[in-house]
Length: 102
Image (cartoon, rainbow, N blue to C red; front, side):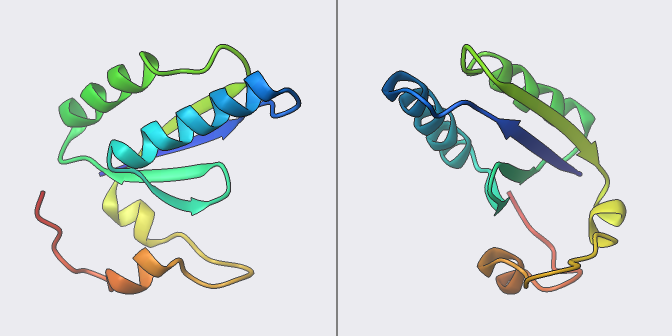
């Protein structure tokens, strides 16, 4: 399964920028990979595992902005189409149907 996190956070003040940076660093430190700006994704073994990550995420939410999470299966994730641009370096590294061991 894949847990996708989408966010739109304010960056108008210095305090907002610190909150944005702290949230982004948290995501990267917790095993999320950036798909594109403000869209991050991580692998979860099952729904219980994903629930654990979502609970941790709720504890690190910034005070303002919008944050959304979406849980998709590997099959659904594999059907994602890139309409403009190219795959990220991580996507290139992990070719289709490679097994990922956590």
